[in-house]
Amino acid sequence: MAASFPETAISTERLLLRPLAEDDAPGLATMMADDLVLAWTDLPHPFTEEYAAELARTLAPAHRAEGRGIVFAVTEHLTQRLVGLVELRNTDWRLRSTEISYVTAVWARGEGYAPEAVLGVAQWLFEDRDFLRLELRTAAGNTAAQQVAQKIGGISEGVLRSAWIVRGESGEVVVDSRSDLILWSLLPEDLESPELHRDGWHGDHRYVLRD
Image 1 (tube, rainbow, N blue to C red):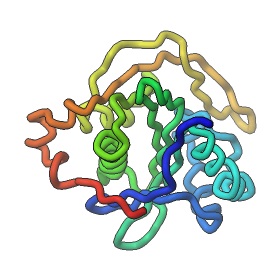
Image 2: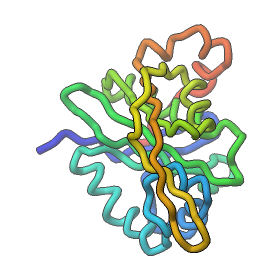
Image 3: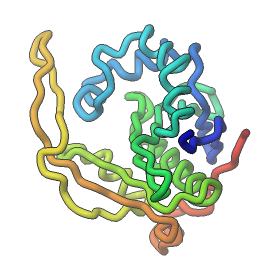
């Protein structure tokens, strides 16, 4: 049987990353009904409440149990409002390596929630789960995702040419176009960089497990 992540929650300064619940379905569907989510992710379109409920009830638990990764709902401590989604995927248990993707709700963008959530997951992976590599892949035109990778100390390793599909709407039709991907990596030693200490990311945003 494949190794798998435990069902857990991760707490950072402002956020709680926890397993999805069926009650999240309306908020998830609203969050995903956004042009940028359509463009930069490979999530289903349209992302319905029915699919969101199935994701929480069946798909995300299977994803974790089968060792492929884990899905976290990201919520604010202060309001308990859903602000995003973080997923680990393409996990290689022999290499102790996995890939992270993230979505932030329209109203929550610009608040630093994405780097805080991603850094919390990275700390948990490296310090609690003994992982040695975290990958991020950002479409060439997705500057916001690239800024997240830079803020957490990610190192750009190169370009994967024509490795992604960017989606856009033309009337009622979804139009696909090819895009390069920028490959970023984060290793345990990268979290000790002077830049992260200076900017306050390391130390001020430590994760706390809530098993």
